[in-house]
Amino acid sequence: MSEAEKQAVSFACQRCMQPIVLDEQLDKINDHAMAELSLPIYGDNGNVLDPQGASSFDHFVPPYRLTDSINGTGFMLVSDGRDSKKMSAAFKLKAELFDCLSSNSEIDHPLCEECADSMLEIMDRELKIAEDEWGVYKAYLDELEQQREAPNVDALDKELEELKRSEQQLLSELGHLKEEEQQLKDAIAQEEQEREQLHEQEECYWREYTKHRRELMLTEDDKRSLESQIAYSRQQLDKLRDTNIFNITFHIWHAGHFGTINNFRLGRLPTVSVDWSEINAAWGQTVLLLSALARKIGLTFERYRVVPFGNHSYVEVLGENRELPLYGSGGFKFFWDTKFDAAMVAFLDCLTQFQKEVEKRDTEFLLPYKMEKGKIIDPSTGNSYSIKIQFNSEEQWTKALKFMLTNLKWGLAWVSSQFVSP
Image (cartoon, rainbow, N blue to C red; front, side, top):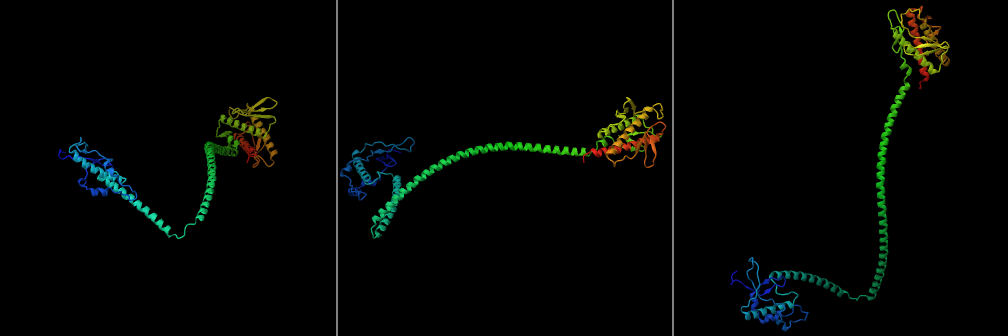
């Protein structure tokens, strides 16, 4: 901006404190307009501007002039001393005008255009509020004017007393309610404390419950395992009860003309030459069976004692300290070995004693073949068969041994039926 374009600024806005440029019409104001502006804005205040007030510069703003700023957009206010007399008269007139306007209102002057617009909007809102209040008061005044009778003061005093008593009563109730409230707060605090204790007890209970639940599950698993073991043991026990140990241990059967015990043939035939080791083993099993049956029923043999000793079993003659072997090693006709025949006769005698003991205990029980003096009698034919080898045929001796094993099988069945629980 050139020196000619610079414009002096004498006043600042009293709201935003920004410099303002006054309208040129303010330089031409006359005394009549000045007098009208000096009249008070509010009619009831009775305040008139002091004639001497024009000379007081309460709102004096030293004249400034606008100059270039650093960035070209600001301004700087500086004092201007040129035409001081002419500027003093115009400045005094404007100052008196603004001072008069500020004294007659609640707003300081001068104002810039933006601040003036803002103040007008505020005053419009205040005016609207004042008009609304005036309407309310006017309506209440009209209502009072419409009431012909004057209010009953005594009734109002009485109502006031009742209201005071009611207030006292309500205050007393309020005090009681406060006390009850405090009591309730104390009770709530106590209940909260009990609730915390119950919560801790509940946590402890659930921990104990979880622990015992786990122990219960483990115990139930052990119980089921034990029940399974017991059931299996019972099955095995029932199976063992149903099992005949004698039948399992001593299997007596036949193989053609031979009687067998545990698959060992007892006897010889001209056409079938059974080895003596097999015959000796069969006699060992036979002696063991008779010894077991006698021990089972508590029988003690007279005159003899059978001694199971595998394939070298024998019969002991009581009182003589003599052993009769139930095993052989030579050919069929060995007349020199009469001890073998004596041992077989002694064994048959012991079997006869067992038969008599069984028949004494059970009169209805009978062995299928009779036995007497070293011979076995077939009741179906009446034929008798010697248990000896000497002066006997292989067929007769083998059949006698077969009948002897049959009697042992029956004796075994009877003992099993007596001592096996149903």
